Length: 93
Image 1: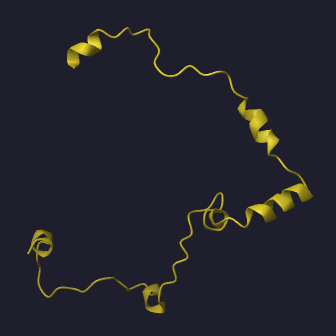
Image 2: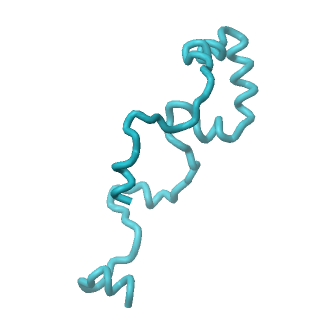
Image 3: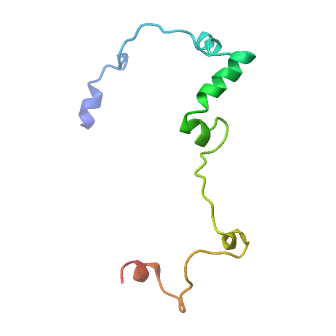
């Protein structure tokens, strides 16, 4: 395979040739709604679960509700072992 790279024409372009598409600026402006049209669009979009759980500009909301004891600063998951053991011995006894 190493020798195959030497036979490739360096000026050749790879990929699929496509026709020109709309400029990005015109595509973004096409969905720019003002006033009541924007409000009505928000109402229509609110029925989708992705709109509620993945709002633009915010992280994904999983709606986890953790118990109160997990909110304290000293809380840790798991059970402490009585002696020092290597992780390998714990995973593969």
